[in-house]
Image (cartoon, one colour):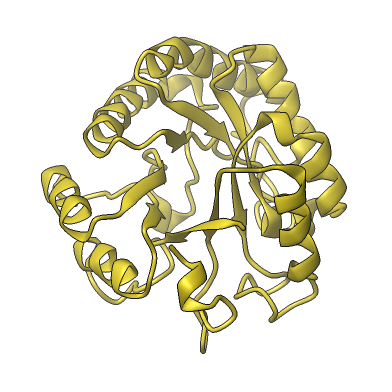
Length: 257
């Protein structure tokens, strides 16, 4: 049976992150994930996680100015020291939370630099970070974002993520496979999952095209989730979607923990 972690970037967004952690537990979840907690005291996060009795399975490292559309900056060579300092901060939080995965988003392309220069920046940063993270038992994940909604993002397909992982060549650099992003960008969900299973560190789901709950769009999640289970995937599946209407009604309470 699949295991689920609730993404607190979308869920309960009308209350502070600390309160979202407790609410997730009340709604039956024993695992959560979240975006970078900018402006939130890390000790308070750790205390809230322990009090709620949940695990943190994943969080995004600092993405930059999220409100202005930034989704990471690993590919910007002018921000190398900033990125590496942010990675160290993320690892410190991961250690305190006993979180095994950090999503290291590549960021959007700069028009004044070649694509290869920026990909090389990603490779250099993650090659530097991989052994440090491995020493702490942490995997760093590459998540493709689809070209329809993120046209200038550096890593837009599973193939592009695989190419980066091949260049970095570290076992703890893994793929974060987001079913919504993949459906919008490339399709062929189940076969792609099957052929990349050994490199997948985390899976996230949302229906397409509206990025709402499973069952609200074009994807057959009964088929997809059964296939994931049959493949032998034992990790968590992150619920990273817009909580519209009865957003958790598709998942029985006793199957959330």
